[in-house]
Image (cartoon, rainbow, N blue to C red; front, side):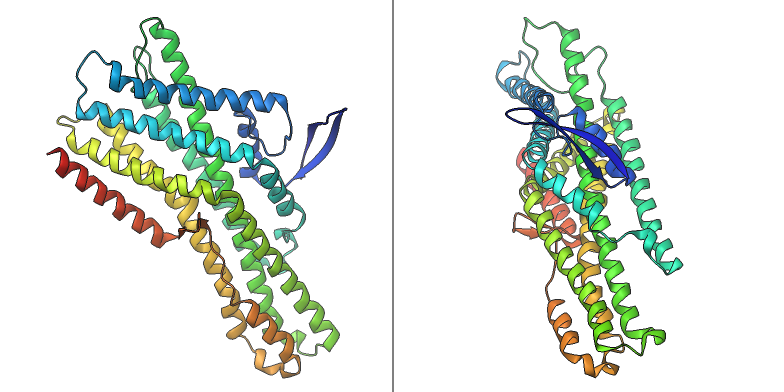
Length: 392
């Protein structure tokens, strides 16, 4: 367990409370980096966090403003490539502001989720079956590896973007601002951009994957309830207790899934819109480059990184999330439940309950899954073809 002292500023006095957060590697690292941008959900009502949040969002807004000013104040005629770079800068930092705002305004809800993960989730170490326990541990290890890979990929993008003699982002430089401070300013906010995207995306991914593991554990327990020959002599009371435990935990997971949607659903809509825009712009940007150079490699890398983050952090975990809930119903139907006719009433109740489906939703418009991923890519390609035909 990770114990962190959280300072809560009250109107009358400062109160220190111990907030126990699950010691999952990804969550622990994300909370550390979220502190830098003022969005650590474990720190409530902190003036320092508010200052850091305002600094991160206002700086991002300044970069957006400078990029927009380039349309009106550039002394040279803007090429199609310049316009594509400007739009990619605007979209990237709009995305950062939306993520930071969501995380800051939903700090209480995210903190509540993390506490529920720690207090109410079944512990992997308590799993009796060693093969099942190994499967769950393997999933958590893979989650950590995905985090490391995402960090590595973004670090590569960051180093290829850093400016030394020119600004890393396509933006306007007012005559009264020296070039060196502007380069340093944009470099700092490129770092904050990377921190924001990695930490928030990985935090959401980890919460969804840990919830998926809980659905897997319920499914395994349901199967064991009806197939374990050592448990064939259930009394009515014992069976009801075991079944009630499963139903209660499944109800909790359904409520937790609803909490995930309520917290992140609006951000998901903005995120999907940004993904479509970025894929479209970078595909177009790559198609108009006449000679391959370092920027071609960088843009191709950004294109793959955008798609990788969308699939790994959202679509794939959300697909497994929904599938594992479906598997609980399949476990009941494919088990030997018919041998427990004297328990028919509670069995029918759980079957009826399992007809409820869960999914990660983007504003109620679409469910996040692999099918949506394919639709997003198709939509981005369609916009790219339209943009290319219009420009030609």
